[in-house]
Amino acid sequence: MWSFTNDKPVYVQIMDEIMNRISLGVYKPGERIPSVRDLAEEARVNPNTMQKALAEIERRGYIISLRTSGKFVTDDTELISSLNHNRAESSVRSFLAEIRHLGLSVDEAVELIRECSGELDNAS
Image (cartoon, rainbow, N blue to C red):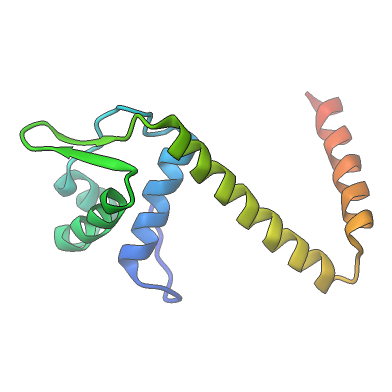
């Protein structure tokens, strides 16, 4: 589900969503992604806005265009692994900033993670 905020340009938010889909494997390496028109319709944005986002993702190497066949996710699994690592690192940095804001130390945060992780392991 696409939802946009006013804190950054729509095309950047589209990029984030598509990169998220690549990262999560919704769009798998080597797989054809929906057309610009289909994605624009799904997101309810102008096709030019969608094309701008896809062009930037392509410039970064995460998708490739084949003239008559459409756009495909790169089959460079190292690049996708790097994307996943960068996204995880960003999440950890945000988490640590919030923990510090709450007045907890990193050690306390680690202990809290262990506790919550144990609860999750026991629930499954």
